[in-house]
Amino acid sequence: MIEPAVSLQSVTKTYGSFTAVDDFSLQVERGIIFALLGPNGAGKTTLIKILTTLMRPSSGDAFIEGHSVLTHGKQVRRLIGVVPQENNLDRYLTARENLVFHARMHGLSPQHYNPRIDRLLDLIGLANRQSDFPDTFSGGMQRRLVVARALVHDPQVLFLDEPTTGLDPQSRRVLWDHIQTLRSRMTIFLTTHYMDEADTFCDRIMIMDHGKALVDGTASALKDALSQAHIYEVEFRNHSDRYEEILRSLPFVESLERSGNAFRLVLTGEESLKPLMDSLGSSDVRKICLQEPTLEDVFLELTGRTIRE
Amino acid sequence: MLVMRRSIFSELVAVTAYPLTLYLAFGFGLKGYIADVEGIPYPLFIAPGLISMTAVNAAFTESAWSMWFHRRVQHTIEEYRVTPITVYDIVVGKIFSGFCQGAIKGMAVAVVIFILTPFRMDYANLTAYLIYIALGSMIFSCLGTICGTTIDKPENIGRVESVIIVPLIFMAGIFFPLSSYPAAIQPLIGMLPTTAIFEGARQALLHGTLNWRFLVVLLASAAVTFAVAAVTFTRKMSE
Image (cartoon, rainbow over all chains, first blue to last red; front, top):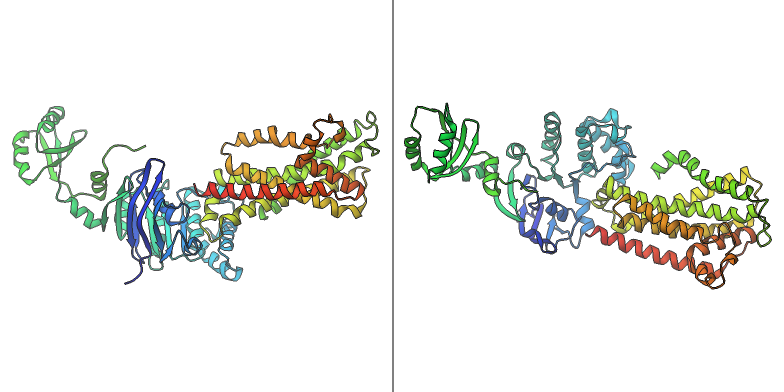
């Protein structure tokens, strides 16, 4: 059996009485883009910190390419590249010096790292700004530099913790184009709040909450699982307030969301459609249609719609 | 080192201004009012202490603020920790950085005092003197590392400097002989590592003598502060 790139075995992390990660197990095969999704406080960053040796689990163990984070931390750190949530560049070093410093911490020689840094700076479009300090860069440029820094030593597993948060659409696109080019050479393990990114770019998605995995699969498999839920969109011409009252009173309407004159409702089953139409009549209905579930629907269905602190 | 090289000139100008002002103000301003101290002219009496004070102050400041800044503001400590270097490498590097800053800035002040004032010394005494500078810088660099590791709010580092570091330095006899203290507290003052640094450095520079009791105090203090700095940093990183 091929060794997984990333493996977690019954990992638990507690802070006093709070359990951030609860008996979590996972295996990520090599060469894929794996996305871990979850609301704030779900335990995603804690998991990444454990996998990158920044934090020790309270119990269980995690492995990168077969090396334990508990007993072979140094070996693990040789194999991983990490892009944290914050741009933790050294603002007193130039763009190039940031990359050189990282290479030296990995014990690389100038003959090895200089050509590689040249290539990376070219690739991220910062070759002509390599002597500038990160403070003079835009958020997108800083983010690209952090990604380049994580790649200087050619890691086998790349961890990206919310890599595109705070970036404009153009910068997000450039960064994703770059990440896409890496998938053939390394395993990519990322967290993101952008469902469209996970849907479009990731081979496998896991949704977690309260320190536990909820579902795991491809984007289409997760959406298919939710297609059993009967989600409809209904829009009225007039009297939307009255129709809201009617909809709320119907026993087969599981959930209801309103946006102006439009309503998004989940029915208990296909057989509820006829009694729904009977209740609403047809005079004020502008539109009624079945809605294909998105990854965001899956996410909200599993993790709830309440805002987390 | 790269960052220090880049800013060394402005740093040295800033760091020499304060002790030089003290030297000119006290050494010359008070020279007419203060008789020789234990047979030594007053400007000569305070010069070794001012050089040592600059070194230990610089060592503390560099270590404390650098550790705090990299840990709390830039989060670069987190970047170091996902590379193959160990937590011990990081803490030793930070202590060494503070030590170097202290030693370099102390020497810079010595050179400036030597060039701008009539202060002269016997060069044969320099090696003994540098032993005290090195040990003092090491101890204060470790203390700074401990502060930078444990203190999260920057204003609290300033408070530690005001309440602990400055009294430790000024009570140790830079500007006056230790014999000025009441006899009852002289043994206590004698046990301070800063007394060992400043009094020992003065004896070394002016008389070429190494005081073994002071050296033992300094070596023990360096060992203890280093161990505490390493353990504190390791614990903090595992939180």
